[in-house]
Each structure stands twice: as C-alpha cells, then as structure tokens.
Image (cartoon, rainbow, N blue to C red; front, side, top):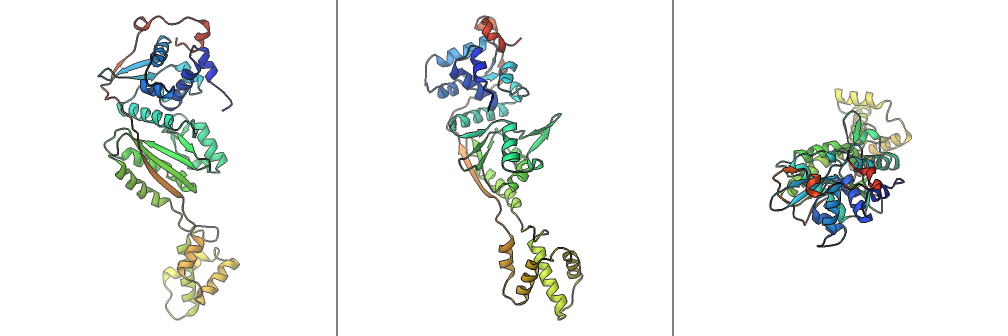
Length: 346
C-alpha cells in the first residue's frame, strides 16, 4: 500500500522488527504469543522478546491474558496503534471469547508461515481485487451490516498465487459443530460461483473436524456448478432439450402433444430464434446430434475448486480466561519521550 505505518510505529520507540510485528498483529489477529514474536525475529530464546513486551506494556499498548501454567497471551488494545495501521474500527481491540482468541492465534501463525505470499489483508484490498480486478459484482461479495455494509466480515486473510488464483482461508475456533463453517460457505457461495478457479484452506491445530469439513464443502460447492445457462440457453440446457423434443413431437404429428410441450413451445418462441438454434434443431431431427453432445456444447465447466486442510504444528495455551491488565506501577512508569507521545494511550 502507498501508506507505510512502520515509520510511525518506529517513532513511538519500537525497532523496525518490533514495528513490523505489531503491524501483523494489528491487521490479522490482535493477539500474540511470545513464541510467535521469537519466530518472527528468528530467535529461539533471548531477551529480544522480553524487551519488546516490556516496552509495549510501558506504553500501555498491551494487556495480558493469564492462561495458567506460566503462559500468557498478549492482547494488542491500543487504539492509536490500530489507527496507525489504518484499522480504526478493528474488532481486535475488544476482548472476546476463548474460541475467538484461539482462532486469531491460528491466523497469526499461518500468516507467519506465509510471509512471502501475496496477502489481501484489509477489507479494501479484498474488494479491490475481486470487484475491480476480477470483475465480480459487488453484490456477490460476502458481507454483513454494522452501521454500514462490511465486506469479508470474518477478517480471514486471502492469499493470491503468482497466477492470480485466490486461496481463501477458514480458521477453526474450537466449536463442537461445523455450523460456523457452514455459515461461512453460505456467505461465500455467490463469490465462489463467480470465480473460475479458487482454493479454500481449512486450518486448525488438530485434524478432528477435517473429514466433516470436507463433506460440508462438497455439499455446498456442488450447488455452485453452472447448469448450462448461457446466452443461447438462458433457461438452461435442459430447457432447450425439452424444446427440441416438444417441437419434434408437435411437427411430427405422430404422438400426442402434452400441455407441458405447449408450455415449453410458448416459452421458446422468443428465445430459440437464432440460426444456431435452427441448425441444432435440424441436426436433432436428422439424429446427427444427441442430448449429451448438446449438454457438452452449452454446459461450461463450473469453478475449479480445491479444498485443502492444514494442521498447524504449534502448541497453544489452555485458557483460564483470567484477564489481567498490567499496571504501570508493576512494569515501570510510562516512557515520556515526546517522540513516543503520538501512540500513547490517554
């Protein structure tokens, strides 16, 4: 993007690596683990993570979620930080359920695994890619309403291959049922139907739900296949075949014409009038074509969909959801450098 938030975060006192990591957290998750920062800076152990976390706590940018067993989740809550990365209305600032927090940690790990990929991070980037670059009608984009239409409300990242093929993502949140995934499929069905090729990755830390998710995808995706509707067959290829049969019976006078035949002929009177339609009817009467050949002629292949599953090979804390806001007295007074005042919470 043209706007670069990293220098502003650096002006708050963060190093370049710290600022880049905060950007990823603010855009994709709102939550992070110490090990995720260590992996980002490619350090297994050391004081870099402690130094970064203590700095963010002194600036009052983080809150700690105690998980027991000396494990913590860090929640980025600073409104100015989100504003700096153009996420003014981000829901990540608000503490939600354990399942939500878990799914956000999954997202951050998956993004860290794919940092070299092209990622559509924001709502605006996704709308631009699909509505402007791919030519999909905006009405087909998934959306919800919260005072304004919000497109792609799940906030899951979309990855774009070098060939321009989108890879959508769905992150499990520990739900017992697949209702949430089925709602996701319902919401995305119009967009999936409008695309020629796409991939959907179902991501979790265990493979317990994978077989059910695959079955749910197959059930939903079968409905997105094109059924032979085209400029020449606007009511579908089966209606055109009904027309050929009805016309042959009507003109042959060898068998009784049914009420359904008459209805189809009335519907077809203003539809099947081109030279191509007449040629196909002549070939039909001469038996030089068949229903299967006509189906192949007008039924274009549906979207080429690929469904994949990903098991994240990382450990996640078991939440007790005891949330603790760390005080300035406990972690030192807030740093007072004027260059940091841009991002301090009031």
